[in-house]
Image (cartoon, rainbow, N blue to C red; front, side, top):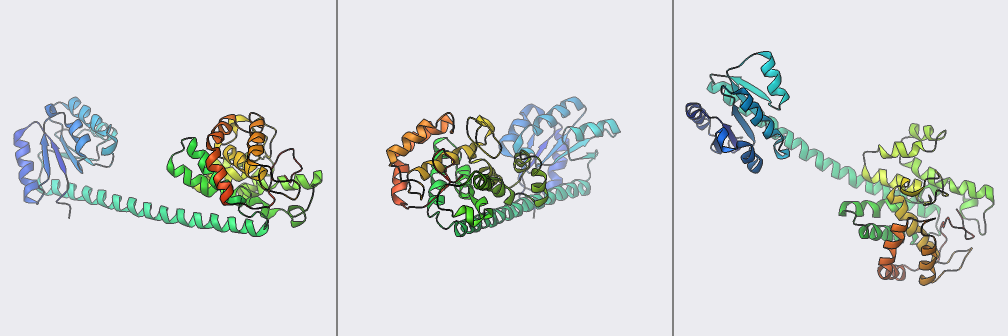
Length: 374
């Protein structure tokens, strides 16, 4: 089963090499490389990634330890077991070789049964570990798909709750991922931004209909209730007990969210929580300023307001694309991160095309000093 494994033998003694060759050959191992210390075995191992390494320490234990340490510096060899051949058997020596990265040692003279058993056991362990790693990768992929499906379901729930939002959520997610692409986000982050930004107003499912669907300006009390949608949204993505902790200290939201293992859940929660924070610190719910605000929240803040500006609302007309761009530009440095505003102006053409593709008239949350619902 393991006879195709690549084995590296490092030994300066040709007699030892001959014995090991006969033992391994009798067991059917054929893919074996034999090197001495003078052959720079660490570099060879780093380039060829053997499945298991057999290292004879000889009489110069310091030289053996140096080779062991240099092999372990190669990241590609971190899962390759190293078995030491040695005549030494004192506890201090054994402790040192394990500290330097060896998995096992065989006291010389080497016997056929002991050598082949150790090799077979380590190769089986390596194979099982790799199989487990692949299984975990598959399970993680399935888990991520399940999370994405949950996110999509939550997005649909928000649409049903606030049934006037139309394609606002879709456009904001597209704008956000385009802005992130312009900011040189890696591809996997672009997908996360696209998915997670659809959750920016998910907290509105916890806002009373009397406030959410009110025609006209909100009272100060109603506005305060509306602003809680950010914390409600964040709470959806974190454990209930942790949400309880945030009642006394809202900033605990960030601490808890940043410890979330799932990138999609973490970014969804960050966006839901921080897309109404302002660059100058006058936003809500945490009053974060500048780069205290997670970059994802800063991106969605611009995308959200830009989209709301150039669509009709019950409390405002639809501004033209040019008017919307100018208003966003004026808010740079106080409401918005100037870097993101600068980037969005590099994307005028493509974002205008998207706006034309998904035209609608529906209310949305601006968070500006217009007559808006916060």
